Image (tube, rainbow, N blue to C red):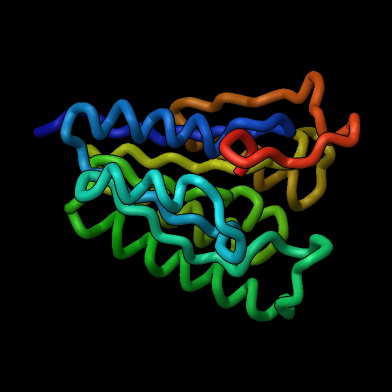
Length: 188
């Protein structure tokens, strides 16, 4: 029997949640572990991890299941399309998690999908509960602040409660606020 798998959460309003998960990918692949990342929100833009993931094959598989960022300026997809894509990503996630093929599965931006009500908290908690004991499961994306007493902060509390490791990225300063646009290779 292998080591106990962890539930790891990278969250917070600061930059670096997906980057932290990708750092974990590099470490895991270095030990010949098989890793799959399912992206719940990203999908319509081209970003660097799409190309770098190919260099880490066959140990690393990246599945882009989202329709792109929800509700931002260039989002032309109806909300129903985002909901369907996120729920399809849940189905893919269950299959990957239960397949026995992976040591690590990363649900990238799943916390945003919960917050935006694209997927249900109960479905995500069920996935966490059903993971094989030895599988490490990583959830990324911002959880809304705790303590508000609303549905979203209750979701955050429940995710944090079932996690073994939670790291919160906190924004101290961001170039976007100074008018500097997202930078290729740094932000996407």
